[in-house]
Amino acid sequence: MPPQIVFPLHLVLGYVACLLCFRSYLLPKLKSMDRFGAQRAIATLHSFRFFGLVFILPGLVGPNLPAGFATFAAYGDFATGVLALVALLTFRMRPLFWLFVVAFNLVGTADIILDYYHAVRAGLPALAGQLGATYVIPIIYVPMLMITHVVAFYWLVRPAHRQVAALANG
Image (cartoon, rainbow, N blue to C red; front, side):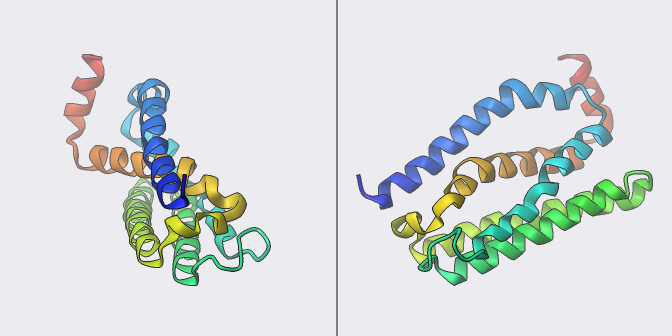
């Protein structure tokens, strides 16, 4: 099977598996928390996005990984991870915490969407082998990140009283 088919297939199946895992195991736990606790847990997951810098680490990825994709993806992840870390560091200063929660979710979502755009433009599915050991990032880690961004935004815009009522009703 050619990489142009394997990579998108892996990506779709990665989203399916992550959605099933999230719905079965993570969402019930997040729902049992208050808004602050749930957003703090999501920020903790995203605080590891500094790991995306591996896309520009020579020897870990292939030399033919398109720079237009790799550089943007690396620094977008890094910026998101730093914002998530700052959100966690400001958890005692609630207005700052919420500001950084919004910031890391906006930057992180934009990063993922733009990474998909750059990947398609650069023909990444045909060059997926150039991802080397980092192949697992877009297939497993990115779907979970995007799912948690969607949930974080939903809980940010949803009125608090509705969330409490939803929790009470299960």
